Image: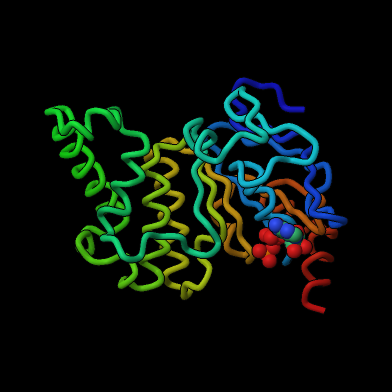
Amino acid sequence: MATSTAVLLDVQSASRSFGGLKALSEVSLHINKGELIGLIGPNGAGKTTLFNLLTGVYPPSTGKIILAGESVGGMKPYKINHKGAARTFQNIRLFTAMTVLDNVKIAFHQHARHSMFTSMLRLPKHFKGEGDITQKALDILKIFNLVDHAYELAGNMSYGNQRRLEIARALAAGPKLLLLDEPAAGMNPNETRDLMNLIAWIRKEFDLTILLIEHDMSLVMGVCDRIYVLDRGMLIADGTPAEIRSNSKVIEAYLGQEA
Ligand SMILES: Nc1ncnc2c1ncn2[C@@H]1O[C@H](COP(=O)(O)OP(=O)(O)OP(=O)(O)O)[C@@H](O)[C@H]1O
C-alpha cells in the first residue's frame, strides 16, 4: 500500500462487478503527484471501468479510492470533480451545438468563485467574473491551438480538434488529476504524435498528474513514466515502459487479442 505524502491517487483493492461479470478484480495502484501514467490493456480489460470508479460514475463494489488523502469511492461525479479529478471520454462528449468558447467557459463556471446568486442578480461581480472567465477560456484555447475556432460551433470542427477541445475543457476545471480515456482515438498518426507531445507539455506547464488510457501500447511508451496493464479485470503488470515492453504476461495478453 502506498503511504507517501507524494501519492495523489491510491486505489486499494478496487473491484467492480456487473451482474455475474467481474469487470475489475482487486486492482491496486497508485499515482504520485506529477506523474504521467499509462493504463493499457486489450479490449474489455476494465480500463474504462476503472475510470468510471475514479470519477464516480459507479461506486466500487469493494475496495477504496483515495484522492489527495481523501476517500472518494462512491462519491457523486460532480463531487469528485470538485475534489480535483477531471476526465475526458472515449466517445467525445461536447456540447456540439454550442461554440467552442462556451464549451470551455461552462467548465470554468463550474469552478468559478462568483456564485449562482451573483450571476442571477447580475451583480457587478458577475460581470467581472464573466470577463475573467472569457479571458481564461481563450488562454486555454490558445494552448490547444483552437483560438481561431472560438466562435465556431464545437460540432463543426474536425474530429481531431474536437478531441483537443475535450482536453481543454477538462483542464479548465483546474484538476489535480487529469484522466484521459483514449484521447488519440480516431486521430491520424500526425495528429496523434502532436497530441502526445501536447499532453507531455501540459503536464509540465500545469503541474498536472495524468492517467492516460491507451489501447495502442507503442503510443504510451514514449510519454509515460510508468505503465499499468490490465487484462480481464486484473492488473497483470506495472513498470517502466521498457519493463512493460518486455513483460511476457503483457505480450501474451496482447498476442491473445490478435489471435
Ligand atoms: N455498465 C456496464 N454493464 C455491464 N457490463 C459492463 C458495464 N461497463 C463495462 N462492462 C463490461 O466490463 C468489461 C470491461 O469493460 P471496459 O469498458 O472497462 O473495458 P476497456 O478496457 O475500457 O475496453 P475497451 O478498450 O474496449 O474500451 C467488459 O466486459 C464490459 O462489457
